[in-house]
Length: 291
Image (tube, rainbow, N blue to C red; front, side, top):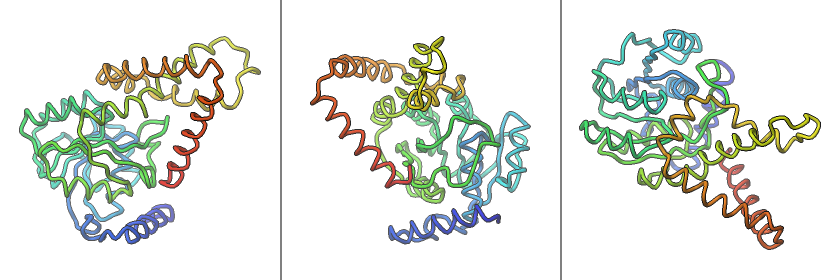
């Protein structure tokens, strides 16, 4: 185990002890076998964390190069040639539509858990298929993609939304804790409504700003604007699926944001101060959680 992996494991153990969580009950060293289907940034990072916590990890990706790179990163005990087999848990970490397609894979597990950004549709499909499913969404990531961008500590202190759908809640929560995240249980539709504002709208704003600033002299694009543009550099294929799948909630968030922008643009001091206070509180909460 390299120095970085040891450091994050020690940090995770201290955090769990502080919260009164027993390591053995969270799967650490349990020898449980998890299959990760989809070995991009999220899937490979999750595999790295689970393997370091004592899980046996097998991985599959339709792109053979991704599976090979994940194995070279030390994320896997075994590379699967197809999404099949019997496991304690299966984690679907491909893009949203691919995760839905993988629900029909010839595989069996006590728990099926996905990591996608939209929950209502896949929860509905999993229920219809009769799978022991929990909808999952780790609130972590970067603008990078693929197994080469994966890293230990990606989920440390981050939220991990979990949406009950008939699968074993305890095992799903164990996985969230094993990767260092903070699990939060909520309804799938409520999840989609909330992340339409906290995540999907942020990407839409970033893209809108990029469109508005296209052609602006470089000297007039300051550091604040450049930081806001960062999210728009994320993979467009993934985001196209997310925005389409959560379309109604995102459109409602856009309408709410437009009303807020119109009010704020008036320069009303009270509105600006309220926004500043809200932003400061959110940033402080994120810093406390490791975000």
